[in-house]
Image (cartoon, rainbow over all chains, first blue to last red; front, side, top):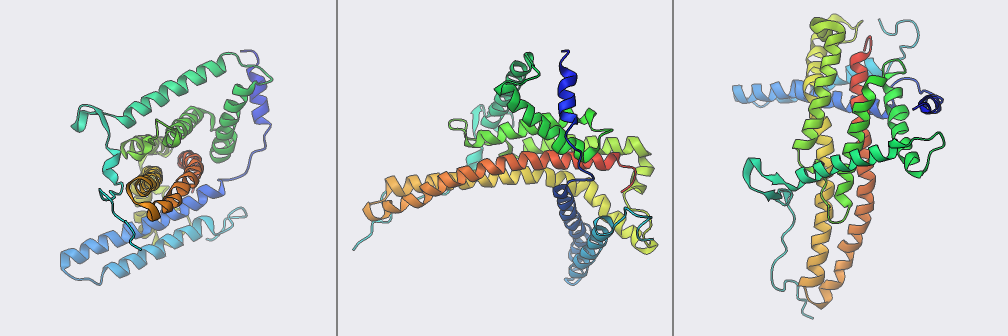
Amino acid sequence: MSERPAFRKRWDDVEVRQGPLPEAVAWGAVQTLISGLIAFGGPAYLLDRWLGTEWIVLPGLLLGMVVALTIIWFRYGTDRSGAGGPK
Amino acid sequence: MRVNVVAGETFVPPSGEDFWQPLVGDGAFALTRPMVLFLLSAVLIITVMLLATRRLSVVPGKGQWILESAYGFVRNGIARDMIGERNFKPFLPLLFSAFIVILVNNLFGIIPVLQYPTMSRIGFPMALALFVYLLYLYLGIKRRGLGGYFKGLVPQGLPPFIVPLLFVLEIITYFFTRPVTLALRLFGNMFAGHILLLLMALAGEYLLLHTGFPTNVFSIGPLVGFFLLTAFELLIEFLQAYIFVLLAAFYIADSLADEH
C-alpha cells in the first residue's frame, strides 16, 4: 500500500471549485418554493376546511410564495462576498 | 376497407401493480424481486470493488481506471467541491457507496433479464433518504446545539417582522421537503421511466401479435420508441444517482457551514 499517496496526489491536483455547485443551488431554490406553498398554503387549506370557507387558501399560497421568494432572494440573489451584504 | 382493430383480447396498459412481484411468499414479509436485485447489487459491488482494488498500481489498468474515474468524480466533482477541502473526507465512504448502489440498481432497469429498477419501489429510496436525513440533522445539531441549530435556520440581518415567517418555512424545508423530495425524486424518475418502457413494449407486442394486417404495421412506432426510451433511461439513471449524491453532499455541507 505504499503507492497510495500517489493516488491521493493525483486526485488532489484537480482544482477545487468555489462554493456550492449551481445544480445544488437550483434544487435548493426549488425546495424552498415547494416548502413555501406547503408551509403556508397547507395550514390555510386546513383552516378553510375547518371553517367551511374557501377564500383563505389563496392568500395562504400567495404568502408562502412571497416568503419563499424573499428567502431565495436573500440567500442566493445578493452578493455577500463583500462587507456584510444587506443589513 | 375493414380494419381489424381488436382481435382476441383487449389491450391492458401497465399499472403500478406490475411492480409488485413477490418471488417467495406473499404479503408484508414476501421476498420480492427488488429485494433479490438489491442483494445482487450488493454482492456485485463488493466483489468488483475487492477484486479491482486488490492490486492497485500507480499506472492504472483498465478496470482500475474505470473505478478510479467513478471514485474521482464523486470525490472531486461532488464531495470536495460541495463540502470543502477541510471536511469532506469522513463523508466520502457514504457518498461513494450511495452513488454506486443507486447507479447499479438504476442500471438494473435496462439490463435484460434483471430489468427492474430497484428504486421504483418507494421503500428503497426512502431508506437511503432517511439515512441522509438523520445524518445531516445529527451533524447540524452536534455542531451548534439544539437551540443554535434552530436559530441558525434563519439568516441573520433580516427585518424582525419577517423572521417568524421564514422560520416556519425553513422548518418545513429542513424537516419535511428535503427528505421527502430526496426520496420521491429518485422513486418517481425510476418508476415513471420504467412504466413508460413497459407501455412501449406491451403496446408494440400487442399491436404486432394481437391485431390484424393493417394495424400491426403501426407496432413499429412503440417498438422504435422502446429503444429510444431505453437509451434515454440510461441517461436518467446516471443523472438520478448524481443528483441524489449531489444533494446529500449539499445538505451535509449546509449542516457543517458556519452560517447560512
